[in-house]
Length: 437
Ligand SMILES: [Zn+2]
Ligand SMILES: [Zn+2]
Image (cartoon, rainbow, N blue to C red; front, side):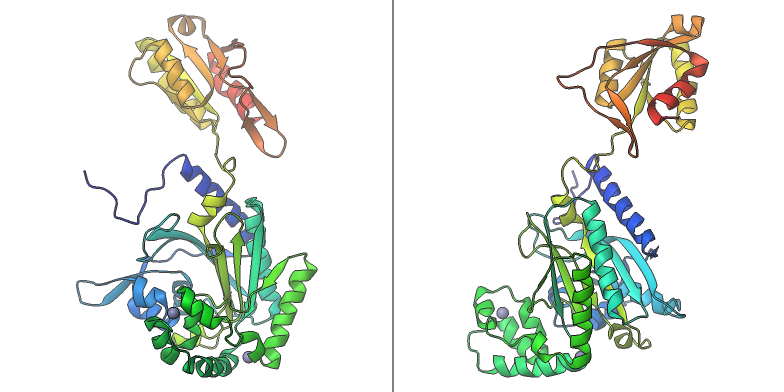
């Protein structure tokens, strides 16, 4: 048998219910903040990522799925979405006009990382990108939007880490100081020795404990912010504090990509390791120019869906359905049930039946396995009298604001209370019972 590629995985029901639930919650919040969805290709020219993410980053240097197409052009499966969204925004002139231009996108990303628990080579992100405004209010709003999404998902304790990376000028001063600091440090790993020359900021990505120890005394970006960048950051923090957001300033937070400027942030969930942020993002005002576009302030974030699903409480997003199962006995009853099935679905009720002529007992156990709320038993007698038995399989209740929710009766099955309903009234009666209308 052919199996899935190492590091890739299938996401199957009922787990997919939880994914849909998370994505629906995110879409709802995006709407509230005026964001609209874009759907983009998974493959782009390699150059797009090399120029935006940075050649010295781990992503570009080690982790991209890059291959020549049939004409020899170098293509890459997108390792992240920010560069692609900006590419599309510039290509279609979506950056034009007044106000903040707001877009979100959902989908898979690809990185050739060492497979380990919770890390996949095809992983999923929910991405938010906003363009056209450099005001600190937008930074604060984007962070509040992210927290709104995460709080809806009841992820428990979340920590917001923030830093300012300054503008390109601030970064130039800082990099010079950092290079100076690193100049006489022996024992840096080979990667860091290369980074020291090519792009010193990237040494902070190093996971080697030895390099980490050396970097403990390194200069911090915050001390190199000019007045405008410092004021911008102070205003972001003030707005967050005003909205009761607890944040931790993290002076070494640089994110693993070259394009960030000014505000950078990560959200870490208790229950995941410190390295494992569920979301992260920041400003990237310089990226448009790097890609040959106009000056375009920009900010965004990505939520790592795979990791988020790991910390999502087990009870959430299970997506219980209120199925009706038609248990039909005999050819005539099965024939009638087939039509009834479509009538029920026409009423918005999930409905199923058996196509294999099983015994009543086997059909009842199938109904149970499918999680049916009601079973309707149809036989010759029901066809003659035009009245069918309605059998509740579980306790259920209509809960205000949440729709109908199934609640299993403690200790198992509730006492069976059958009732008789005229066949032609079935869709109406079941819609009333299960959908509350
Ligand atoms: Zn600056
Ligand atoms: Zn190192």
